[in-house]
Image (cartoon, rainbow, N blue to C red; front, side, top):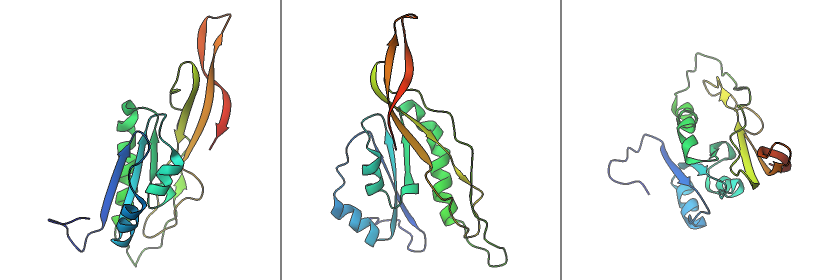
Length: 166
């Protein structure tokens, strides 16, 4: 999959950015796995299926979601941190340090002003070092919500009814 310029002693990463259904076939994913390539999946927008991203990615902690392209800049440091933590060498003279969860970020803006939309909030696993354990649990929380019109105020309230959470 990686050819000219590939360094055999360096880990290989593939970052997939999508705003809808994947066209990555299972054989391609299997090829990446056999070639020891770590796949990070980044989904943008309401048409992105988190379960499909988890199939594409090497592991669930390799999935990142943004409700709109305007939020991609906020994901860049998280993706970089996720990749760079893996390639930091382990020092046998230091004990492993397990990761600790950050506080949950605020909910993203609702993807729709009327009808069914989604909101996302994330947290980061911080401080993992020297071969320590990842944080247990999920790093993202996605809620599908319905916005409704407030007849008294004549405005739409943002995603006020939870339809499902995953």
